[in-house]
Length: 255
Ligand SMILES: [Zn+2]
Image (tube, rainbow, N blue to C red; front, side, top):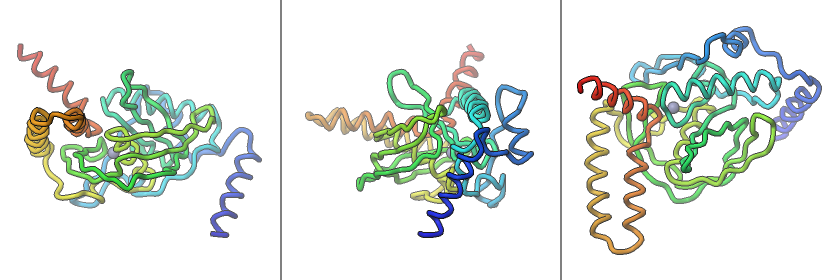
């Protein structure tokens, strides 16, 4: 405990003592200064337990970085997330061991927010099952039990403190992305088996169908909740939207 607070003081001192921000190691500097609009998403193969080592590493705080570097990183992450069509992306997924992630809020506008050095301050006791996939583990998916709601504190890119009260699918995204900062992947906390993405979709569709039937049968507020849950689990996958849009394009090409 004492050591942790000493370490924290040192980190704070280091960030205060260096107005230009921490110097990045050469490999990270190359990524942050990438001339391209997006970065490559690095992957992990859970079956072989091999892949990019940064995905298995605890990321370090990012608030001490130079403002310009944080802004560049934010631009790159946003462009990479947009290209992938996902709903969340963490810096380790582009090979940067920094505590930064993006979450697409499930508001009407689908606002993408950037969380620097997030802390999950409150986790609900209630948990909920849902299917997840990950841009860094292509081709598979599985069911994961997550806290139903959370309170997350983090910093914006400008360094302002932000508090997010989140629940449902959005809370699932926060937890999935937070795990990336801890070097943890959803396959580590799977509730059941990992399956090919097509199989996951088949099961999800079957479960969605059941939820929809429940919804029709119910006459109280539960119907609405069930159908929201069904929608949430359909979307509960980082890369799903991208694949859907590819599928839609393929469909369009056929026509
Ligand atoms: Zn992921």
